[in-house]
Image 1 (cartoon, each protein chain N blue to C red):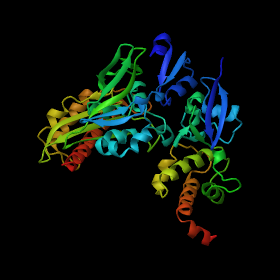
Image 2 (image 1 turned 90 degrees about the horizontal axis):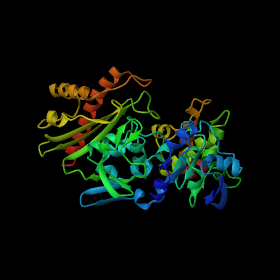
Image 3 (image 1 turned 180 degrees about the vertical axis):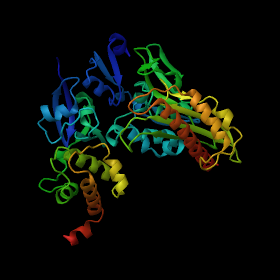
Image 4 (image 1 turned 30 degrees about the vertical axis):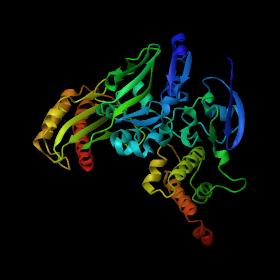
Length: 165
Length: 279
């Protein structure tokens, strides 16, 4: 089978790769590019473990064909921290013990980032709807929801947060 | 179109939220897939001379974030905002929701209620057809192999007109409609219903319009809640007579008939309230 050459931007860096026509973006990230932070759960768009941000839209990378991302920009979990500085969502998840086995965590973090990019001060209900496309079989969700709300409050009141710590 | 004509096993896609799970689920791979999003008119939203043209390949998340669409067609936009999760709405489109031809597609009843036409292109050029004529049964459309939908023409609602959509699912998110109902209502200056359209999903092999709804509701002042009023029983009977539901894991046929009556009433109330607010 001939492979397609695709050029795109991944976490701010221009990259290119070869993929099969029906290979998903998830498989491209993990199997062609070695970016294994993005997880495969269901492979059918139900669990959100493979969430990435594609041209500003939160999507399941298992529901995107690799060749589709030609010329587009992708953000994955690997691009979330700023070097050694964790994103406030990542800090909140650590402090709030918002994960146990951790397989769903990258997807939750990416979905939560997409939510806060769009709505920096969500209500609890908005958070619960915002991550309704992500499944977690360990935590019971409450710690995840609290951690997202905590990160939102840190990000919108950076001064208060600095004084408190 | 040349690609589609030359490859009988080819498929078009936009968001691929149905296509990829079908391939993963063992359905044979199409000989070729064509990404419609790269065709500019499939991604445009424009309003000219009282008609909106909404591209077929626009993700639901873009539709729900569009201020003009949200105020003009609140029911259509609330339906788009109910499809799957935020992740799915980042990909799922009106064209795909229609052409996947599920009886439970959320965005189809409001399109039908709004009197939308599908803009269809094929080897013979462009044609348009009422959205209600595109789907002919579960998984089947009236489109030819080399035809696809580029967008929808939706008449702007006149003053005193608005729409609404609701669906029933057993949980709060991430499920497929057990019943869906769209309503479009036009009221006169006194708030009296002049014209109504009620369209149901998931109660028959295709979405169905309750043809008698306009006759039953015309001349009535639709109350602000759906408390008992004799004409609701009439509407309920009309709704039930249009339903031809199945029993499945999401609900029994009898349950669907009952829920359809409730949702029809609720969406009529909401659409009528929104219609009065435009006056």
